[in-house]
Amino acid sequence: MAMIRSSCVAARRLSCGQILSPKCLEASHFCVSRMSNAASTSHTLEDRKKEIKKDGLQLQDFISGDLSEKSKWEEYRGNLKRQKGERLRLPPWLKTEIPIGKNYNKLKNTLRDLKLHTVCEEARCPNIGECWGGGEHATATATIMLMGDTCTRGCRFCSIKTARNPPPLDPDEPYNTAKAIAEWGLDYVVLTSVDRDDLADGGAEHFAKTVSHLKERNPNILVECLTPDFRGDLSAVEKVALSGLDVYAHNIETVKELQRYVRDPRANFDQSLAALRHAKSVNPNILTKTSIMLGFGETAAQIHSTLKELRDSNVDCLTLGQYMQPTKRHLKVEEYITPEKFAHWEKVGQEMGFVYTASGPLVRSSYKAGEFFLKNLLKKRKSEAKQE
Image 1 (spheres, rainbow, N blue to C red):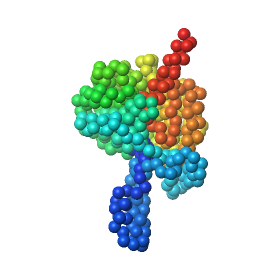
Image 2: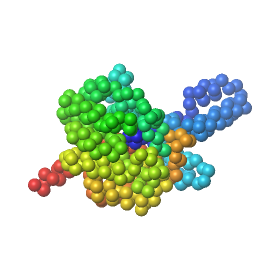
Image 3: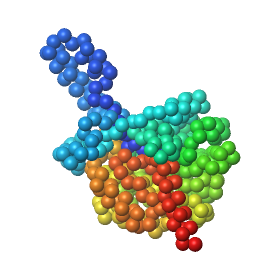
Image 4: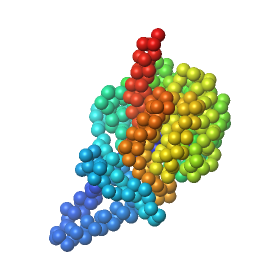
């Protein structure tokens, strides 16, 4: 499903939280002796362990603390590769702060008023404040989730709700989405969705209408569509690719060799690659983009081979991020990839000729999309102008 593919998702886009919950603090407040305080703390820790075992890591597990300082990363001695029966501890580089500002609150309030969903919120993304608020370079971005929150597929990395027949589409959603985004004053918006195999065109027309409404209201806004594979229906791919969007994105999720292990059986590498190739062939002016999660146990050779196939298919943009296990029912994290390894793959991507490669533990397919896209596009245009 595209929604958690985006990023994400649920725990795969995570990265922030607290060590003691309000309940923990409240419990310790009523302790009257060291013994009772110690017993309460022990009880709290045991409860927390049970919660994690049952539901997987939650947002509060990712709030940055002392270990989030880069200078202390080298001191970390925890295991990065999972041993049999083991659950890996979260390494320090996956802890972050969440900056919240006026633009964040504005976007959040508008979403509630119009009953819209975003991947940023659904997945509890650690980068939400930075993206919605504009960040260092004031490029405000958001990822809107179309067509509801129930997917027709069941990928093993994703905790989104699933059903054979999700609720029908909201015919007003394309218009409401455009209205909201026009009010926000965003620079860049990512439209994504769950997989809707129950619909004849997989929801392609719904995507196209939303893009059309957006461009009518604000021709200057950059629009990325992070789409499903539409069951390999290239006419549906074409409908979205010709809708007026700027970036056509579809996530392959993992290396070629692990597709069947990670994704729903109805998805596969060749089908995804065909969608990306066709979008580019019918509209050469758009950028194509995909995302890969690392940490499933893939090898360096498999990553390199997958990247080469993507580039040979003229995929322009690539993001690589750390997979996070949503719940105990989903695939375990086999390895936490270090920032140094992510930096290596970013360099490899650049050398292969991708327009941009964003690679890092907290990078998600729609993370800082506007900033990355704009910076690299301007750089490319300047370079082409000098050659003329």
